[in-house]
Image (cartoon, rainbow, N blue to C red):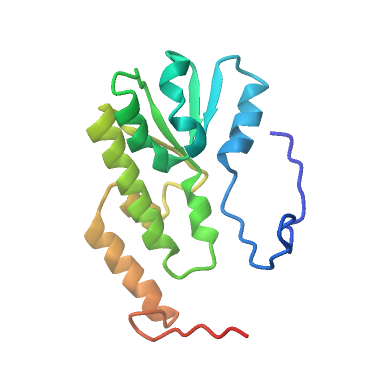
Length: 171
């Protein structure tokens, strides 16, 4: 990638709301980058998914948000899926939420189940995390007990629930 950097916006350009959160690279950004290199790249969002069977996609790269995978299976059950990739799921770890690790663990397990049960494929995860990261290792290997033990130690250290109560103050 070109290493271009931009400052995060402090307000939504559409509604000028102040509750702006960054959630990752985005399917549209991935599509734009891959389209420059590959001819057969398709992007699908929730609005376009119902039109997909008519397009008769049989090869190439299909980019969509992860939560559309299950619907894709029911719309086109014979779609020849060779790989399901989950790109940089660790961006969830940078969300300002004490439950980010838990969310990431649930998300990866859910995607792994969809890939296996619906498409008969293993989930391929592209990440920049170090393989020696214990939290990541427990998530990737589906070791719930070890993940929960590590998560509880971290939450105790920082006095997060269940070791304290959090309240939200807004004005």
